[in-house]
Image 1 (cartoon, one colour):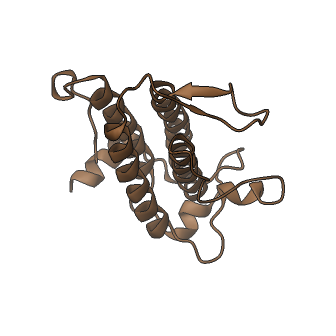
Image 2 (cartoon, one colour):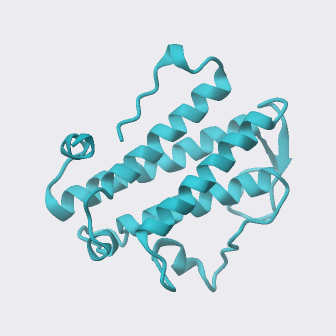
Amino acid sequence: MVTHVRPEAQGDERGALLSFLAEQRGGIRRALLGLTEEQAASRPSASELSLAGLLKHVAEVEQGWIARARREAPAVERNASNWHECFVLVGGETVDDRLAYWEKVADETEAFIRSVPSLDDTFPLPDEPWFPAESVSMRWLLLHLIRETARHAGHADIIRESLDGRTAFELVALAEN
């Protein structure tokens, strides 16, 4: 489960960026190792965040950004009426099905990014206050996904350690056994 980004193995900027994104996804997946559904859904720190909720959120965010880059609607539209569901499992969702969904999203992200002619290509963003500009490049998109996922991988480390005291180093050993 440990993902290292080896500079010589990526071949190009696109491969390197996709590898850094995969590395951060691995951090969130690692934080979920060996937990029950109840543990994954619990909120053991001062934060309202849970590991299950972080998993759901990062998968939705990644899918939504790639959909926009493809000039399609996101699979889930979030607004004031359903934003609260972004960080909790609802309607029978499980950690396993969210992990499987995220794996599918990750595969789609890689295929899409590898298919675009240039990382300099741009796509339009909706006219909403939470979007940074009228359009962004594919490079910006990848950097944003890395930043978003890394931020939440750090949250996941803290939540996991608050749950049972296990650190990322201990979870790596667990994954290797």
